[in-house]
Length: 368
Ligand code: SF4
Ligand code: SF4
Image (cartoon, rainbow, N blue to C red; front, side):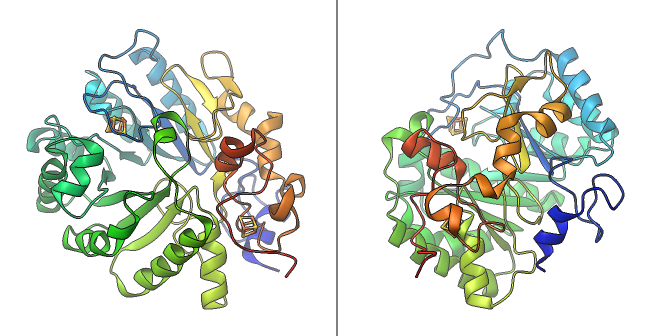
């Protein structure tokens, strides 16, 4: 029996929310909660999932609603990791109070700022003082020319400055990189840069064509396979961990290459988890409180203004389907790797309108 079989197979024979060997049961509790605290952002990146806007919207969760939400998370028997995302979270005036409150409540909190002028030494130090455990910085090119073409002028230098400040004050960083036709040839150089910046993790997001990402070009499934094999080799030789987002079949590649699957860095967010995917360990709360299985799968399952997050996560039909691999269709439905992978449900939805269809970015033929 594989680890993930044990994890999902014995939810009632052990302490609630834990598998017998101590992992979180993703049927019971999310591992990571993303909270899009705002969509406001002064940048206008080509691929922006959030389709960011210049000003904060009055529809955003208020400070008081945010506090109640954090109280709810802190009361979970198994407290999830919280990732504060946006937009640019630094566009909220109350962001440092929210971070401090979350940390004081015992919630491990990560932060994903936009690389703007606000990401200066003073603010990074404040985040560290408030107890942020990790900061994620986006780097989509190994040089200003390549990165700024996607993110806007000055953004490359802002990332480098933020990384340097973080290193000086001992705030761990992860580097997020988007994989598209526009960035793929530069990945070997970016891999080097990630090491130079002292990052603890390199997280690669394989484009899902939602939001402004509809205007970018995905790599082919064959190219994605080459990239994953490259990432496997990088993971072996680099001091940082490598993980993929919306490309769970990296787990298959790791398993095929190594012959085993021992908690490789996988899933969205931070930390090492096992078998995490959209709606299965991951939940996303929008600026308006809407509950989604991830930031890339625009199927709303409830709203924290009216519903308990945990109840939606456990009982909503969409979330239950996403955790039930027997519901998968096409190649993902018959694939022997589907318990550890299952494909990107967000990409399947973007490509076909059916979140249970096969992931078109995977070359694996389960019947061969
Ligand atoms: S920095 Fe992030 S939120 Fe801002 S425009 Fe770029 S992708 Fe969107
Ligand atoms: S066919 Fe689907 S489940 Fe199997 S490895 Fe590919 S994406 Fe994963």
